[in-house]
Image 1 (cartoon, chains in turn red, green):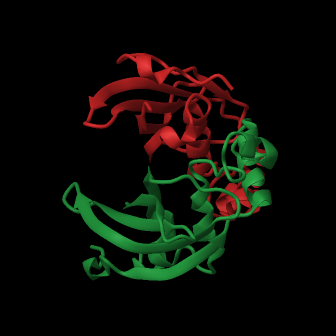
Image 2 (image 1 turned 120 degrees about the vertical axis):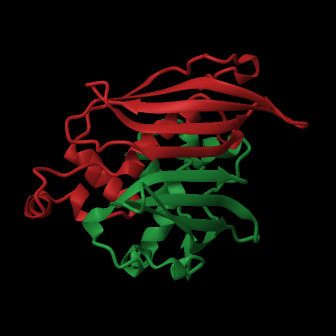
Length: 139
Length: 145
């Protein structure tokens, strides 16, 4: 896989945008099984209706997993020092998500050049689902 | 107001065998495509001991226990008022199929904003591998409305 050349990164550079296939119940069921998070709010519409939600909602951690692919698609995973997100709004069935990353800061410590990326997930209405960041080492 | 005496409360250690099939299932469910997440032979050709665990994989460890949400119950709040507001991972080493991970968790901090109308709980999990090396630190922030 071709990795992004982060050694020549400049502030404001964008990582390639990652589009996620439409969120479906199947995707949530698969993630429930794979992660072990069987909370019925993500998989059982009978349950969600009982608690006043018209449908299941996505696991926040699934969306964090998708956004993490902006890192793993473009970097070697051992370059990732830190990866964090804030969950801003709920992801629903039918949402179409776009994951993006931009170089926010370049920090130099004694050993390494560290890049701070600003990460984001937006939906088809330009609503922000997740805001995140990552610290990556360049070597 | 939350019971601040819960700060530093520790939770039982969870032990987790990182299995190939589980890693592949997780990689598929999160849409990974690089064969280092699926194919042990290719992972070895790249110099790894086995299939690589994706960055958020260790979230699965918490669900190995009977009551993964025990710390939320301990807060004595209504589950519907609790939101997972934030998640941070700090990485020290990669995790591979075949590793045995130990998770030690505690309530790390509590604080409030907006004159106490929003309360925050920070829950920390430290993940150590079979060689006693700290591999990943996790900090989850819950907000109670």
